[in-house]
Amino acid sequence: MPMRWLRRALPVAFLAPLLAGCSLDGVQSIMSPAASIAREQHGLFMWTWYLSIPVMVGVFGVLFYVLFKYRRRRDDEMPDQSHGNPMTEVILTIVPIIIVIMVAVPSVRSIFRTQTVVQATSDDVVIHVTGYQWWWKFDYPQYGVTTANEMHIPAGKRVILQLNSGDVVHAFWAPRLAGKVDLIPNQDNRLWFDTDPDGTGIFTGQCAELCLGAHAYMRFRIVVSEQDEFDDWVAEFQQPAVVTTATDPLIAQGRQLVASKGCIGCHNIGNYSEGVKFGQPQYPDLTNFGLRHTVGAAILDATPENVATWIRDPQEVKPGARMPTLWQANDPNRDQEAAAIAAYLLSLGVEDGTQALAQASTGGN
Picture 1 (cartoon, rainbow, N blue to C red):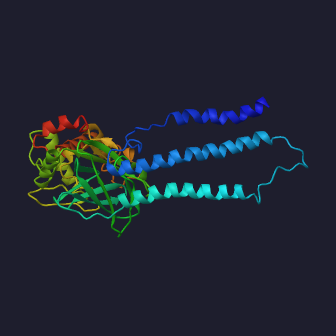
Picture 2: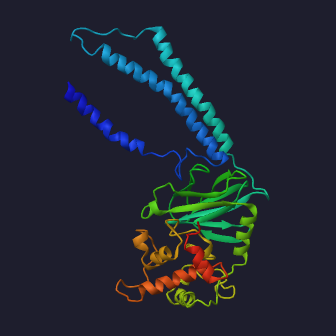
Picture 3: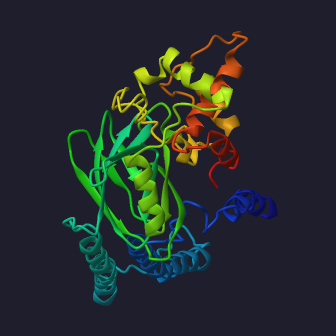
């Protein structure tokens, strides 16, 4: 008997430390909502959880009662039968119906509150979100701004996202701001949420639909800032202060390498050469790259070392990424040239290239 109970207790003892490692206030925890939609969903989740407690207590209470009371019986002894007992059958019918109603009514109410298709007004921020394998494109039609993997929005505003996919099915999910919605090719889905007036900060999100390859590395950040800071960010994109001449020879070399290595064959850099745009829409736009916090779809902070590592060998950072490696492994110039390209990219959007590199050393944090 002791050994049998010991064998049953070992799995519980093993799982207990794993459960203790769960965090309720992590950077992507639904238990710490920061917007009205997320709070609505959190409230519904907690209501159903509280409702499940008496159900679990009742079910397991009856289960343990039966296990202990009838643990020893003669083979020819049958327990009392409840079939045909009107009171038992009424209880077993009415109680589940009441529970379903108590779950269904708040659920339907929350669905109507959060899934309503809202009409955009002049006060809203409309963003067209396109998912690619494996990064995110954010277009702001109101402002003529296109960026990748980092969404900037003003605090206290309603944000309306038009969701589409450029290849396979993805899912946009920022757990602390709103629920997840699929991005399906040629189907315009919509998601909206509003942030708190004082809810500035950086919120992380990711693709929540298996899209093969580097799916686990398809992340993004939402930067919520004050209205004046958001306006400054928009203004910098509308007239990007791209460094075309720089006193730093490393930045000047990086600019030449971006052209000679063929980077502009895939990536657009606004105002790269007197307003001429290059690149293709299915690849990330690098305009004002120096203003970003991350690189590689929010995998690494955008420090000079991390950006150089990403450029030198994308597969090392993001296995499955479609960005090619530009050097042979034994190329003696690889590290120095990758550092030069990183310096140039981090200068984009900041007039003083030296200042840009100093700011980038913190990853924008």
